[in-house]
Image (cartoon, rainbow, N blue to C red; front, top):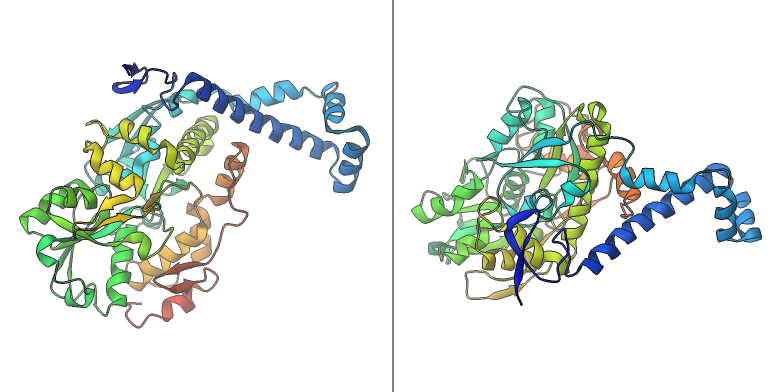
Length: 453
């Protein structure tokens, strides 16, 4: 079958029969999705109008039963412009204030929705002209956001909390508009350590981490402590940009790392390392990266923010469908994005992978994508940041979580898109078999024998 160039990315070639946005096998499939989105928005508008006219549930039900839903809407449309309202909802609340945006990202699979939204047309569909900027490391991302060089950015999920609290930098309030990915990390060891499968034997080893304020740091510390090792005294933790982790493993500068994909799989691909533990086996469904904007961006550019959220949320939802992963891999593999071999990305995104120990494993949810920013996840991060001494003194867990993780706003916007967000902002989580109740953070913190606070 011959191929043609995707109009949104000349470097991405698609089979003929594809659609104009490059995300579907055919133009018919593209049009069907558009019709589906429009229909979902239309139903939401109709429901909102009917509820506004008949706020009492019983009165509303009686009216619809008496005349029928179709007749009811036809009658309402005689004095309320339903079609115009639907069109307005589909297009957004108003003109986009700032169409040209600069968004930073680190070249890891956690950034998949942010990255794929450019070549696959999600930004353009929302009327945005986005320039993605590949960034060297997380400290650089932080500084670019603080200096307002980026309008928004791919961030590690604890970073906005730390930045808002002034940990490691001057305080700058940052909002988590959406979570990018869940799971998708691993503990990888050098092949020379195949005889050290028991973490209790890791005393004296050196481990790479992407950033102090990262889920990787918090999960590795938790994992080590559960196996009786003090992460500050029994091992050495080194901060390394994710793209440098495999090279440092090969050079012997580190014995292993807890890092993002695709570098765990890349270490296996290059016969340098083996995958010891997937992060989902520590905390299944844990957050990793987030989509952050400086506080005030949404108020200054409300329509731009709404369009940006729609693009990211729809891209994240699209990525969560495993049948779309093949097209996504082709979109994000090129040098200007992840710059990774397609076979490496296929193993990561499909969950069928070689672990470097001679096994082929099948873990379909090795990496997944869910945009909802659970505030309970933020509370857990705060407990661990306090546990290891990053935060001193009393912590108003709930206030910080709700100021930074915009769960209520995300729910509203996801609902408008026809997505299905959870009804609550908090839930219990299980980490290495231990339940975390976000309503009792201090009790949870005191339950750990090994802690700094």
